[in-house]
Image 1 (cartoon, rainbow, N blue to C red):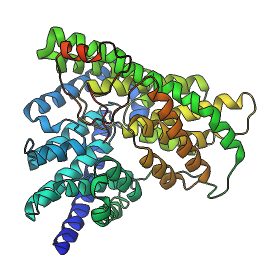
Image 2 (cartoon, rainbow, N blue to C red; image 1 turned 90 degrees about the horizontal axis):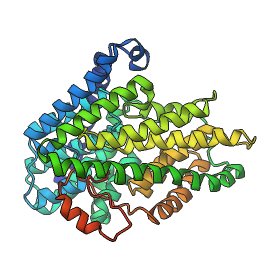
Image 3 (cartoon, rainbow, N blue to C red; image 1 turned 90 degrees about the vertical axis):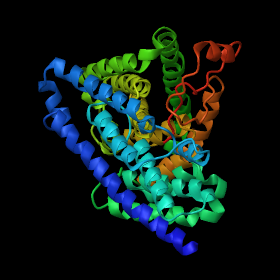
Image 4 (tube, rainbow, N blue to C red; image 1 turned 180 degrees about the horizontal axis):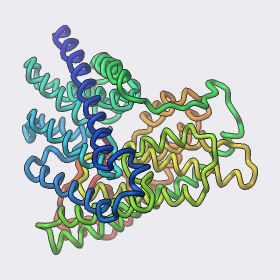
Length: 443
């Protein structure tokens, strides 16, 4: 059995590495194809009607594909595992390819969703097929799916430790002592493949183990600053858009997805028209802010923050197939960079790229309830103790402050249409708002 599990883990890592590489390169190809070159250079030259039509048509196609196969939509890996164990979900090879197509369409046309969610899902689907091929015991389904998810994350981020931490926090914590070796094996193999083709998120300004007290002091002021933006994101998502969703559901439940698809396409078109950097997954934004040495105007940063928050929340409701890991990181990087720029006004000696790295990890870690993944991501991308220590302190305190008003629950399924009456009854007399409809994507 041990030899069979080792072979299954190796195959999962190999196949996931190649599939994720293909998936990322497909997105890059489609993005340049749809926007006729580098989108950040060509968008100002494209007709306005085209910028609105492209994401609108794409999201309608994605919703049509979802209507044909509901497993394409962005479920969390733990939900996938639980559903398979209860015999409520069967993942077919066709679903794997349709998910890649739907996600590539969403990302390449400007929707502010990330590649990590589909990558974890793709890895999980591959692992499920290998589980069937090797006729492994039913009790090992969750273990194999966590192996696949960690492979997918390790490949897309070109970061093996982040993939392992993600799987542990999401699903593998139940059997970490017994099966962690297979997570490590598959993640490292997938990483070894993807690093030859994909670019990791890197931090060029690392000082290693040298600690600067200025950053520790400044980080104490950064905590309430980023908490305010967490509140704004949660208010927009949980209160405003959720209310609109309920009103649409009550009156037009049959056409709900298509109405939000129309809204989503219009919002993405507007974002592309105003500032293209506020669209897409946000990986380029994170890498740029963490390594840039020239100054960016504060008003420009704040404008992109607001546009990305709006774009990400609308993308979730529109059924865009993608995760929120990278979009949240990009918002956090912008918030951190903006905070440091504001500090420079009073001549406080901190560099914006440091707080871009801290903000990226903290904002994602708090809103996805992945504190361990946030700290390991900060370590693996920066190798800088100033960033790692600040991230560890901030992600705990900001989550505590956020939970004073908003109830952040790690739920994975994208949509669970409860009746508005039932939802209202559940929330009556309760000042806290859950992330259950639609739920926070944690993959």
